[in-house]
Length: 431
Image (cartoon, rainbow, N blue to C red; front, side, top):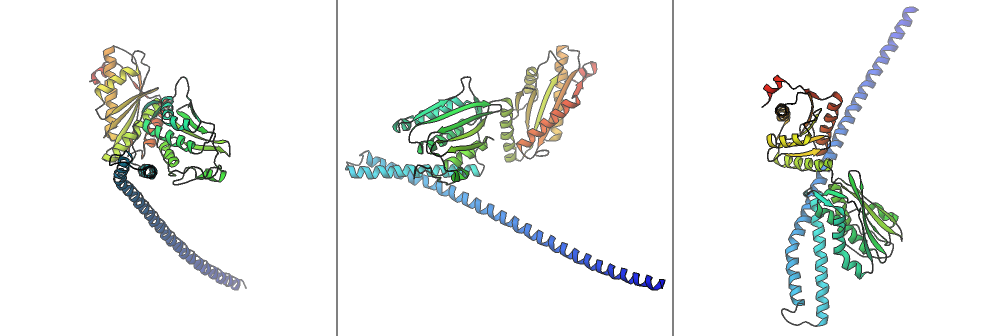
């Protein structure tokens, strides 16, 4: 009986193995089919995304072209109407004057729409370049308030400016900052029938927090999520209200984010609205971040590489960073390079510089330091930390380039950096 049981078990095993093989084959076919369908879906998604981008580009080009081409005929038409209103060709009656005045007003409105369309098109295409500089936010507030003062007075409103007494300097494009404030104040003017509009700011670390607050009709809760959308004519609770291009707030948001800031809105029905946005304060870090961004953009356009070096010298009482800065500026920096003094060292942006070239610059910094110490007769050991990162080899964006350099600088700080001994051998190396 034993052999019969064994035979039966063997037969069952064979059948199970055959079934398992069939199941495995089917599973493999299913997996292959799933992979095939996944690849097809991936290709379809890629094609859809490419088509979406193509259509988006066509739309932007169309809007930009049409808007640009409309400027000239609009200007000619407006000039012609103005000549008639000024009675240059001859006298006109009051009814004709009223009709032509309305027409000129509509032309002005259409011109503003065209300008907004061109602005949003450039912002979305990344064709807006910031000219960053140090500016006092209080001065910008007062400049914008002066422009709106006649309209404010005619509506019986008050426009308040609340800026810190000690100042709140920002590092931004002044023209773009004024455009942000202008769009927000203009929006507040449309929906404020009585009360006041307040411009305020306060320093908040590396940022300056600004707000434009009004005592208008407020924004309904269902409209809040789409406040910053393009062509949105969100309705205030007071009724039909004023109408604009629907692009002012979208442009303001793009400009704030172009400065790496944030913007948000708070509103209570029938009580008013407050827009809060941040702009970078004037600080060494923000200046460096702006410089890195500009240089990376320049490197992308030229197809070159860019290296960021962070140099720190410690344990040298008679050799400060200012002296080192002057030394590197004379001996290392070229015309296209930039350098900024940081609280804990010097940041050096070297244009058209790959990783190997950055290593040579580091070595040159060491030799220059040896020579400077030799001239001072300082017989001491000096701690030199020099961290470098290169775009695009090690970082794909300006933020990554800065973060990589800071990461390496902190790591060197933890490791103690590189100690440069001063002595006869170092004197022979200098030069």
